[in-house]
Length: 100
Image 1: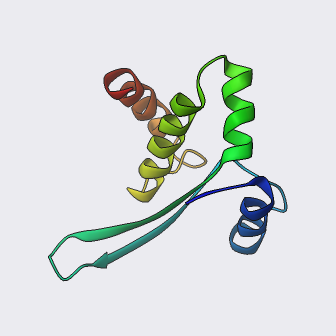
Image 2 (image 1 turned 30 degrees about the vertical axis):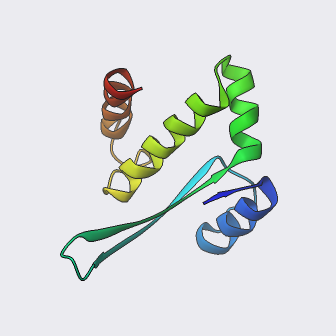
């Protein structure tokens, strides 16, 4: 879902207890779908924050969105940069080089 800072702040506060906007949130699911695939979950991105970050970093909004989707996807796959001692960050940087 693409949204704005107001909505992502509401979600961040409701689900994580953090009353501030953020760039990306991931909501893991894991349900098995009728076709046998697994629904990993949902990714929510604030376009407001993505635009600001893209401007600050000197790249396009599209590039920033690609990086945020990758970041969110890694969270859906179970990575947690707040607890994994850099594992997610290293993988994310590697994947950025390979994919973006």
